[in-house]
Length: 134
Length: 292
Image (cartoon, rainbow over all chains, first blue to last red; front, top):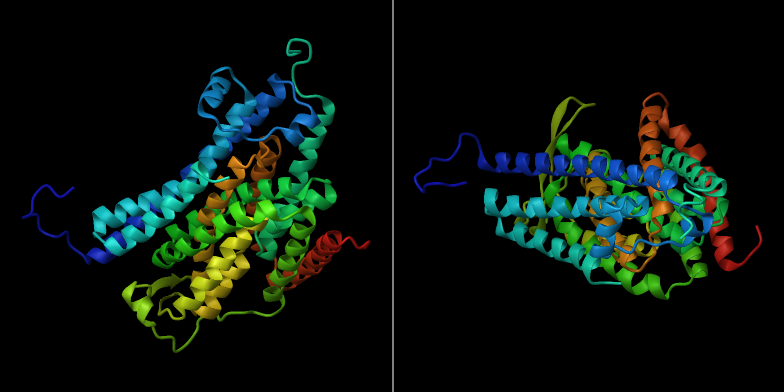
């Protein structure tokens, strides 16, 4: 945060500082996103196989629905399928959060409006695909 | 409901999931050793060997691609090899292409058409294994006006050469076109289309090949996530299939990377490429309805 206009620039070239922070933040988001989504997906798979009735027919035909209230009811009642759906959402959201993070850093750290707009376009398309398109 | 009477999965279901997981593990290993990525191998494995409809295989593949590319992408970007600006700028094109491929073309393509296009893309992807398409360190490249405006030139530290490598970037309009096409292929076939991305980076933009690989991996996650959003909403993602596929492909990719460090890779890649050529021809012949 910039608390005062008089604050002197931090030592070192500012471009370098900006580049490091976007790269470090992206790496962190990707790592945490992949690890947590795989853990949740596998937990859902194991819980589902042990606790729920599963047939080959269900495996081959039951699709991701992703309706928020259905998903929430499923997770709270311990449905392995619903937990897998949450894990899938986490995985799909991982690159999207990576783009959102970069957009915020371009806007706040570097004040690079060209790249803020570029990443904003990417973010809008990824979210539109997830929320609007079929 | 019959929950109380038969808790847990039946034996056939468990067997099915184990088969899917084993095939995906092998696919992940081959994908990582051949350098093609998981998706382009997983789709034929699930359709040819497990008899799955190609649309379901594509739905499973596109999710796995997010996992593997994000895993690899996080390492490259941490090591400062990825060119984040190039990635962000070209993600606009690949994401737009992915939407066209997944939401416009995929719904009107039947299984035969998908098999044919898939076979052709798989065969085309093998070309760089036999002949290098780009250069390790291109010489005499100068920023084109757009690259200058977007400040795309950069540098990375090359571990093998032990020095900092500065590079400039050219051919932005051409690479935008190729990236748009890569996005369409990605959305239509559920693969990362890494070969087209590398083509755009190395042939059109002339960036060093290490930067190209790292930047492609970084971008593939966003392209795949965009396509995956459409597949999730179209009801083409089957969690019972996708979860074993994605986690096994990821594990396979890790194993493949470790194996690569012990093997001389050029020869190994060519051996895999011959096997993949057979699979590509099989996909093609299935699409065309020919016996093979």
